Amino acid sequence: MSVNGRSEKLHSGATMALELYLDFFSQPCRSVFIFAKKNNIPFELKHVSLMDGEQYGEEFGKISVIKKVPALRDGDFCLTESIAILLYLAEKFKTPDFWYPADLQQRARVNEYLSWQHLAIRLHAAKMFWLLIMIPKVMGVDVPQDKMDAALEDLNGSLKLLEEKFIQDRPFIAGDHITLADLVAIVEVMQPVGSGLDVFEGRPKLTAWRDRVQAAIGKDLFDDAHQTVLGAQENVKLMDGSKLAFFKPKILKFFM
Amino acid sequence: MMELYLDLHSQPCRSVFLFAKAVGIPFEFKLVDLAAGHQYSEEFEKISLMRKVPVMKDGSFVLTESVAILKYLVQKHSSSVADHWYPADLQQRSRVNEYLSWQHMNLRAHGSKVFLLRALYSVIMGCEVPKEKMDSAVEDLNLSLKMLEEKFLQNKPFIIGDKISLADLVAIVEIMQPVGTGLDVFESRPKLTAWRERVKKALGEKLFDEGHEEIMTVGSLPQKLQNNSELEMLKQKYQKFFR
Image (spheres, each protein chain N blue to C red):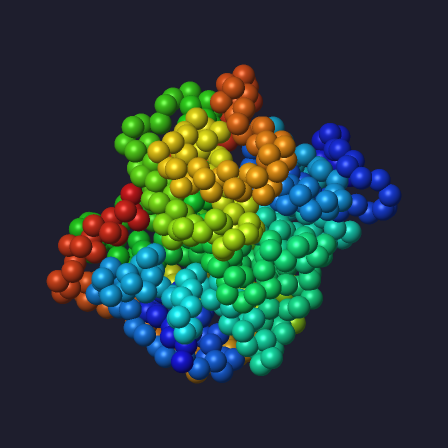
């Protein structure tokens, strides 16, 4: 059952392919997509268009009660929350150890980042996308400068902690190898970038880390996953603001 | 011996404390008095750059984030910690992971906000909480509680089914935060109340009460803060939360 008819069958053979319900505007969707592709995990991509409000549809609500992407369906098992999905895929498909090391301390470092990021970088990076792209489009006004400044201050604080506590002088967050932590981090950091805020400028350490993460993922895959958000400024500009009006209550509640 | 840097006013500190005690993992309790601003001391900064509790120090290995600490304890003591806390079964474990991930921006965020508004707002901001702010925060909390009941618990005894897991533990300590301020979210929620009783029983009632003694007497916190020489410094830090 597809949400809107636009589902891609990316593998043939098995009768019940694993389904991933995704939209590339969403950071957690990108981490799940990249992980699955990188590890050659067969799945059927089910596009849930957030800009068209498909996350609020009745059909999708049966997969994801919380009405959010990403969501996974494996047979009759449905799962939400990208962290949970990534861990499920890693375990089920026995992905290489380095992604989520079995070593006690290394795994703890990955878990530490995956926990911290929710109310830190995820929150602050996501906010920039709303303030810079969505609110001007949907509400037809620019966000007041003091609110922008406060949001920027929060984002800078999180990026500082990412650099100084989580990366430090290591190649990657947990050490010498990329892990789920770096993957989850990079997709969040790319959200403000797609919104027109180059967070890498003036941050050589972060830039070097990004380059390593991109290389470990593979540039083509990385670019493929980020095409939508990097085109956000252009694409959202072309959208009909009135069709996005269903975002108004959320915007008023969270940002204004 | 493993050290746990805690203040039992903090929800994530309670989950770590209760878990270690419930499964019999020995630790040294190191108090970080949040109301006295100890998290901002130079001494504590050496332990954790994040300036937050809980922190675990196991030999030279320092770890923050309660969810990471709980999983570390389960993994390290796997031979003595019962499977149901963080099941080896893939689907059951995923249900725990799903809850532990969802809760940060939902029950945790909203329960904390209601707590901060009810317990700290007036002493930090010097005036009463605007009604709109309070109503909005309580509405968010109610939505999270609804999601907990309807999506995560449904008709099961515990979040993953028949037995308690890390998910229930992390959930209960967050709910107790606004409860400590006198907002009885269990009233008119019989399903949630029944679940709470099961969780208390699984942990041990005495232990549960011990862990929640501080938060249940949090009414005295504003007074404690008023008398605190660090009040001005704390005001500056906390005003950010109320922006």
